[in-house]
Image 1: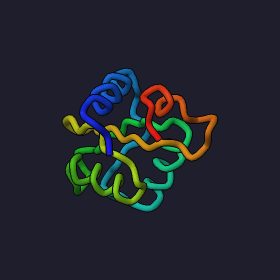
Image 2: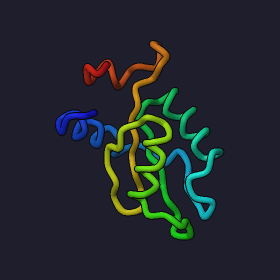
Image 3: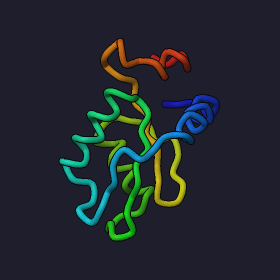
Image 4: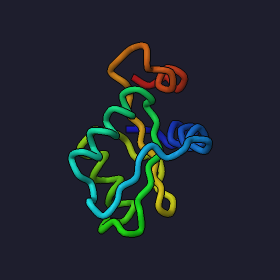
Length: 102
C-alpha cells in the first residue's frame, strides 16, 4: 500500500512516460496481463491506455489488472492509468529504492 506522498512522487515520475500497452475491446485478457506483468517487472512503473472501444472504464481496468498482478494503482486520469509494483529482480529496483519501498 502506497502513502499519499509516495503516490504523488510516482505520479510525477509517470508524467513523462509513454503508454506501454493498450486495452481494447478484448478487455483485460490474460495476454494483456502477461505483457503488463513483463513491463512491471522490468520498469516497476507503467502507464496504460484504455481504448474507447473497450467494454470497461479506465478505473475498472486499473482495478482488474492491479488485482491480477498484485500492483498498486497510482492514478487514473481519463483513459489512462498508471500502475506500480516493486520488481522481484534487485537490478530493476530503481524507483522502489529511490522512494524507500520494500
